[in-house]
Every structure is written in C-alpha cells, then in structure tokens.
Amino acid sequence: MKILHTADWHIGQLFHEYDRTYEHQQFLDWLVETLHHEKIDVLLISGDVFDISNPSAQSIRMFYSFLNQGTYRNPNLQIIITAGNHDSASRLEAPKPLLLSSKIHIVGLVEKDAEGKIDYEKLIVPIYDQAGRIKVYCLAVPFLRMGDYPAIPDCSNPYTEGVTALYTELFDYAQKKIQDDQTIIAMGHLHTHHAEITELDTTERPIMGGVECIPATAFHDDIKYVALGHIHKAQKIGGKDHVRYAGSPLPMSFSEINYKHQVIAFDLDDETCNLRSIEIPLFVPLLRVPLKHQPLHDVIALLEQLPPSDEANKATIPYLEVRVFLEGPEPALRHKVEVTLQKKKVRLAKIDVKYPDSKTVQHQLIAPEQLQELKPIDVFGRIYQSRYNSAVPEEILHLFQQVVEEVNQTAE
View 1 (cartoon, helix red, strand yellow):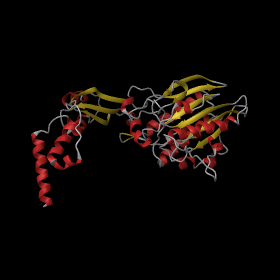
View 2 (cartoon, rainbow, N blue to C red):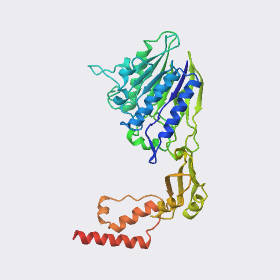
View 3 (cartoon, helix red, strand yellow):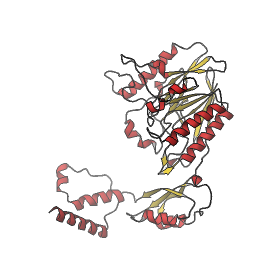
View 4 (cartoon, one colour):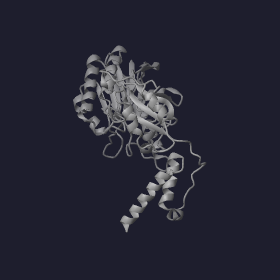
C-alpha cells in the first residue's frame, strides 16, 4: 500500500498581499499528477487546508476541484483530511453527507456522547486494500482545541497531558479492532517538542501558547506512521523516521528561500518502508537583493541592474525582498525603492531594514514612580535609541518639541 502525506496548504493565503491562486493551482495540478505517477493508494492531508476559517468561494472551488480530479485520475484513491487550526472544523465537515459513498473522509470535529465522553469511533478511518479488505486503521485526529481532549485532574500541563491521553486512549480503542494482518497509522495537527520552526511558525506560537508542545512519545511505538501538520518545515520528530511533518507546499516567508518543499511518500505493509520525500517544484521564485544588508545607495545601484519587465506571465514574476542597512529613519525609503523598480521584472514584497547594533548592554527597567517624572522628550529619546540605536538627530528633536508645544497649547 502506497501512502502520501501532505499538510498546511493554506489555500487562499496572500504572500505579502500578493494573491497566490496561481501557485496553489499549480501545486494541486502537480499533486494530481504525482498521485497518478506514484500510484498512490492513500492521501493524508494533515490540516490547514485553507488559510482562513471562512475561505473564499474561489478557494473552496479549487479544493473540491482537486478532490474531483484526484479521484478521477486515481479511481481507487482513498483520501483522509483533518482540520487544522486555520480551518473551520464544521465548515470543512459540511460536505460529509455527500462524501459518504466516496472514498474521501473528512474529520474536523471531536464528537462526544451525551455523557461528554469522546466518540473515538468517529476518529478512526478504515483504509482498504485493493481486495476491499481493511488493511489499516487511521487515527484521524484534527487540531485539538480546549475541551476536545480529556481533562486530567491535578496535572502540571493540561494541554500536553490531555492530548497525550487522547492519543493513548484512541490507540487503545483501535487496538481492540485490529486483526493480525492490520496496522495503525495516525494524523495530527499540533506542535511537538524540539520541532524546528520557520519564520512564519513563530507568529503562531503566541496563539498556541509556550507550553502547548507534545512529545514524540505521545504516539505509541506500534503506530507505523504519524502524519503531522502545523509546522511548515518538513522534518522527523524525536529521532523517529516515522513521526514526520510534511511541511507546507509553498514558501511562507523569505526565510525559506533555499528550502526545498516536499511531500512524504512511503510504502506500508506490516512495517513502514521506502520512506522518501518528493520535491515540489517552485512555481514562483523568491529573490533577495542584496543577499546581505547594504547601505541604501548601494542597494539602489543593485536594483537598477535587475532585468526589465517583459510580456511574460505576471503570475510567475519573482517576489522580491530588499535588504537595506540604515543609520536612522528614512521616511522616503519605500518610495525610492518603488521608483527604482518601475518596469523591472520583480514584485516588491518586503523591505527588510537593519540598523546599527545597539551600544546599550542592557535595557534599564523604569519603576512606575520614575515614569511619572519622565518628560515626553525623554520617552521619545529612549524609544528612538532602542529602535535605531542612535541618538535623536537635532532636526527631528526640534520637530518633536514643536509637536509637544502644539499639543500642550491645544490642551489649554
């Protein structure tokens, strides 16, 4: 049985305000061909199908067109989809009644009975071989929100211990169902201990909370493969080859400029074997100019050397990050860059500014009573120093004092 693992598609996502419909469509078209070429039996999609909980009609149409094309090209393909934290679990599950007769399974919600006990049966999806016999049971666990996992009394970390308990109880439930020639795999959308995160992942950490990490030991050793989503960089966890993040199929930030995006494929019989990554083509290049921060006049000179625009497909024009070193604020920075890039074959996505290293060894904490004694000019000076690592220029200082005087006059 051949299985392919992917996650974190984020259909509908903007890249620095640029629409990515072309890239997502190219990926989905590539995936349809890959499923056919690799003769995949089972596709696992571990959450964050969409970028927002209320995706556009275009994004929804793109997703269901993929399901239609994927199963048309591969009539025996079985697909299991779980919800991520960006998905609306109920919205993702909405078409389930239409899919009951198909080989597509969507799990978005953790359902409970009248007594509040988790209905583990609905988190288990049977996978069939070509003879129509159950070969594998998949523990299809979506992103777990508060109340989805068991409450562990008197524990030090309710999330970690609760999620671990859910996987333990779910595995025990599935273990009672399997026969000698059947195995178990699992899915999850969560953050694991020691996972290497990308630049975009760091923006999600405050949402998840600093303690909401799950150890690789939460997954029983008899689970043959754990298909994870949520972290955007492909990697194995806890030194275990069979516990993996597939990563996102598209670049999420310029920190991934040299990173190869991929899906994970493997064969499953009694054990997992032939585990391999399949590289996803880069549909729109990422470009940094310069590679290291340089003064503005040098950056402008480099930008002027970029190739001119042509009649090529606008959707494939590279995204550009401009890296500039400044001694202080430069109000006209973006205007100067944009003027230089007129008629150049790039799309300005980001200007990354770096200032001189701070000369201050450590920040001095200010007591509340001391704060009352500070004048506006003192607060402004400290903020300017912390941001630009230099003293306020006399011209800006004079302008700030004028503003303070005008405010005081208005208040009187």
